[in-house]
Length: 213
Image 1 (cartoon, rainbow, N blue to C red):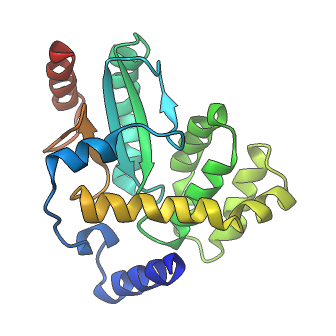
Image 2: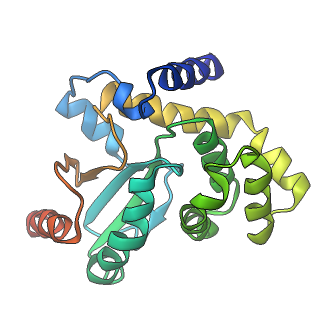
């Protein structure tokens, strides 16, 4: 059923010629339910001190250029000020916009939690090498090999239906129950961040959340 859902999603996206996230219907968010859905789980990968008082949840797609911009231009500053100092932690959750992102996000979840964010950083940095190419799977395999993932491990990883279901479920929950309709989308201590995720704007929101913690 999940595979059918994702195939329909991608087909509708291509037909419309718009990003998949833009096609997601607006969802009415129940505050109580949202708090439960945003609570951290064993599937979450945490960047920073797990006990940090401020939790930044980012819904992202590995094929999203805006997410790559955040990774390269904004996150390093947030890391220095908030994450490296133990005041905040970041959790990236999957919101794949297409089949390529689905495969890449499954790949990232095949490695250990300690290797997750380094691989995510590499995948964002190498978007021009694998996202637009006609043989993106082979390009993704080459990147995986550089990350120490052999060809047999790579093949087995992409065939892992449990991980694929976890990734697609992440998008379904975010879209249908949290009102996520674009990437990247951020929640800071449970509050949805509105606006352009610049360093200055995020610093302001994180500082406000830290003051209440």
